[in-house]
Image 1 (cartoon, rainbow, N blue to C red):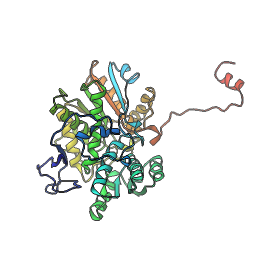
Image 2 (tube, rainbow, N blue to C red):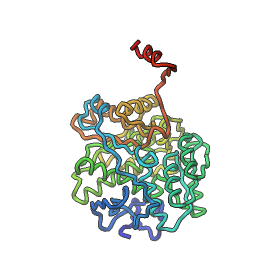
Image 3 (cartoon, rainbow, N blue to C red):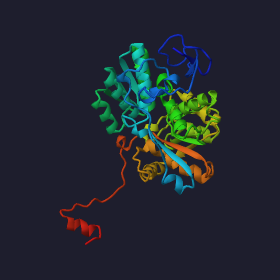
Length: 400
């Protein structure tokens, strides 16, 4: 293969694959490509048109559903109302399974096939497991999803519909992560968990950055706003623009903005108090944004890695309360976009940062919408009348 897996902490190179954490120091593994190039191959499906910067070989039909290529739409509500002239939303909610996780699972399943692995396990708050179940169904793999007991039923239903096995674990996502990790290590199942533990999956997220660059006419945005759990999506977008910079294409790094819930936001909290390291959230509270409710208990180093990416990019972090998260869904709905709460938080963060002056009027800003509203539906309260005739309807509408 035309890459090496290198430890971000001690520089050790993985001697065999699949590799997760560094065997020497437990650090996060990073891909380093021998000859990275912005070589788009349009004949390949989905994100695999960026194969020159992905750890893939041959792409088989079972490993792609045309993921990626999601729309980048100009904002008609949030941006204009907050004085932002160049605000956009990247609709990752329009991937095949309804979330950005499809990018990660397409790459991970390709690598699993190369390694000859058919038994998969994943810790997930819902979206990653739903995506994994879809790709496992296509490839004939066996999938077990370990999810928190609070996982939305819509997401569990999606996993089951594809034939995945679901196991619920009491507590938050970190508990699911621990159970999954132990099972993978003990029995040799391929760990598809889309935190930093699986570097193959994380590479798929990187294509979000490549697409943003491409869709802006090969320009770098001033800022990218990202819903954040442990942070692999933020770190992957950082990596994409770092690679584009080394290729001489991106002239700078966009400011990366981490958005978390006040009820469980260890990375944003560490940034806002200027802490050197991330402290796991010892008492995480439930949040509407269940998809980013990650306490980092047991793997706070993931948060440290994300925190470093935020700082190196010149970015910032935002903590949202539950009402702000709720209003994010409704603000995006005014854009014509239906997003789950965790996927919608970039809207509220964008407004907050425009008000504070962090985002300027002329900045090109991209808010990433990570999950579809049907994943975890939220609706406005309304009284819905019932009518038996057009005459009744006309009276209600004031036309009688």
